[in-house]
Length: 172
Image (tube, rainbow, N blue to C red):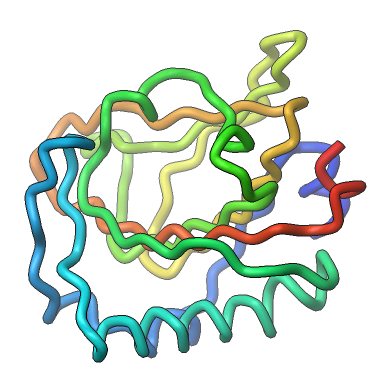
């Protein structure tokens, strides 16, 4: 996994256990016009579920493959916001590692894939249509960029976004 993270800018795995802490079907969604997508309404119960999910991902996915790290923000979103439809890199937000947990299937009919490319050459690395229980760990090194493709159907695209600060040598 480390090789893919360093050379391709991401790695993908599937782990249904990471999703057992967060009850996505019993959250209240808020239409936050500032970002153009739905976000969850947070409360103490939700915060505990998010913390448990973050800790599981930290202990079982990040730490064994990418080493020690610090935590950053956790968000749960439904939909796609316009800035993600263009090639970008999230390092400007601070954390050098992002981790996306997908609660719904995507495919060519629904749209909503995620693409990766080399920033300098603009050569595409791959396009992924995430499935339920997929986890994509993204290297926010400036060597890589990613984007999301538009949804072709009005279906849920619920994603938990976890962010971590890794040893900066991993994202050079």
